[in-house]
Amino acid sequence: MNTLSNRLNSLSPSATLAMSQKSAELKAQGVDVINMSVGEPDFNTPEHIKEAAKQAIDNNFSRYSPVPGYPALRNAIVAKLKNENGLDYTAAQISCANGAKQSVCNVIMALVNAGDEVIVPAPYWVSYPEMVKLAEGTPVIVAAGIEQDFKITPAQLEAAITPKTKALILCSPSNPTGSVYSKEELAGLAEVLAKHPQVYIIADEIYEHINYIGQHQSIAQFPAMKERTILVNGVSKAYAMTGWRIGFIAGPEWIIKGVNKLQGQYTSGPCSVSQKAAEAAYTGTQEPVEQMRKAFERRRDLIVKLAKEVPGFEVNIPQGAFYLFPKCSSYFGKSANGRTINSSDDLAMYLLEEAHVACVGGTSFGAPECIRMSYATSDENIEEAIRRMKVALANLKQ
Image (cartoon, rainbow, N blue to C red; front, side, top):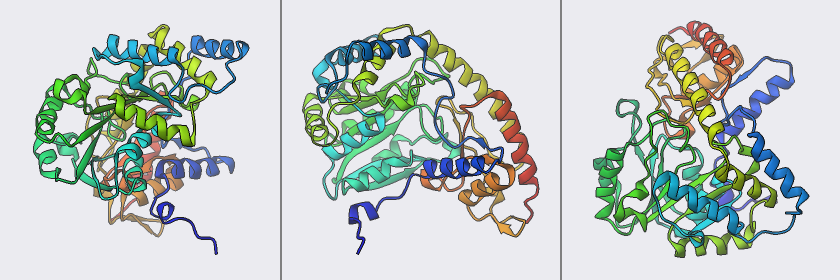
């Protein structure tokens, strides 16, 4: 009997990784696929960061680090939070992990008990509800559609909170929508949360620097929120370091200690060489970050303009990250080549097989009427992808 645990059987596989795998298989067969499925910058890691990693190898940073990361890296993060965000933390309030993904999961596993509710605004990143389920908690999904720019309101948050609510997961700038909460919008949510002191906020700010509306705003800036907010961030998106796997949390020391205890039992400290690279990312020049942000903004403008010309797509203007999340339900019920489109997942598969463009259906993001397209690719790829999609979509008939 091959019997996996109930815990594992209750999990869904990652839809974004599954779509990326499918497109890789087609590519291996010689098909020219434009992959817009994975949330990964297409730039290389900046040179000074790579140099710091090479130096770390030469300087024999090859042994276990402390579980929460080297003090030098944690101090660099403290300085970053002070200088960029106006937030005061100590090194003891920082814990580094193997990517922001592990950081989010660490916090959920450290805080959530069986039966606790965690509010997850939809559209959401695919892993949030799964991580809550892994901790035996209950994800409470609060839907925010394109008409409200995919952002929940204070009234919606208030309505979702019950005596069982343990946490709210807030992602801004958002994966998958690119929506960004303004200071005023965060203040409205903070006002509701101030009335419910048992609720913690897990603020995923991994896309902080890919922002097209100016200064990033964090919910931790509000005095009543600071002691209840766990900030999650890392180097993956801003510094094009996805494979280096360094994320961190900043929060109350008792939560950090809990996370360190947890991490001490199942991964220990993150990669020593990657930590030295991340330290250089935070302490060195920030010019490459701004160059990449400008490139993403140009691509955002391009894909929004082109996607608005696709009949049947409803498109908003994302204010951060590198995703477009068009509503495409006008195609549901239409058919081509003996295939009927009943959901955005069907549409994504149709676009992969007919247009050779990989994007991800919105079902696993909690928005079955949308598809996610990553524009972390060249202008030429964006133009060609939308051209192919238009041709394939025009073939769908009622």
